[in-house]
Length: 283
Image 1 (cartoon, rainbow, N blue to C red):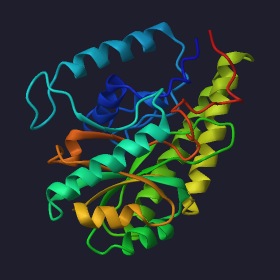
Image 2: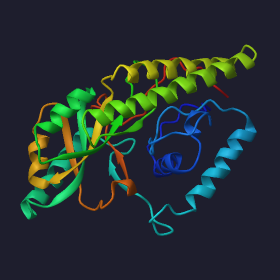
Image 3: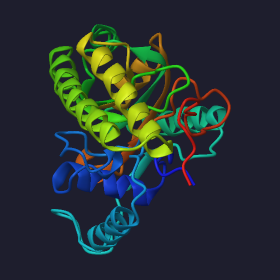
Image 4: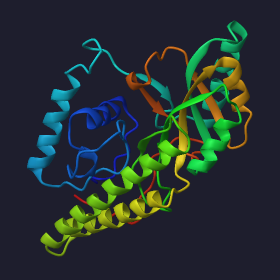
């Protein structure tokens, strides 16, 4: 079993990621460092093979999932907006368009949140240009990932209220965390004898360094965006270049109480976990 290869597109994983932001250290990167403003993040799972650490992570997960978040009633789940693993992307795109058209027909001036999916990874400036084309639409948060070929990288949430400034600041913050992660993984690798565990730590360090460098350069890493606007304005936004789908979320009153999961640009037919071709197998 690969302990650092699970791609989290499940409600449990989303809930754990939410806890990441608010309370707990990041389970997803080997409990290496507390994350700031990356509440939902699904991505590269840490290389943790010690039975004690795995047991601790599972125990913590159970405790957290039974404790309600701020402002939420016990037993409730976050609203899910977007795709799940295994979903057919063309079907999702068609359904998103149908939902938006129905809302426009019912009330063209209704203001709702929506999840925007891009056909490719965009830079902060490109995101600003797309949103700026429809002034009636306001961006809220962005979803990012460094698209390293053949490597599984972390999915992160970035501030995006003021474009492109918030995106640039958030990327710099994530880069700082990745640099710290890389140092931590490299130190752990040096402590291990030759073997699979050492290789996994070295692989994690390599990817973290690459992610840090990409975010430092304001990379083309944004694949999704949470926005707010009238249904009419959202329809105009859906017609812009580089946009694959605009999925309205009329039931979302607070985006912090929802999970947003756009398909990655490389998801053409079906939603599948990113493949890490250089990750050594771990038993």
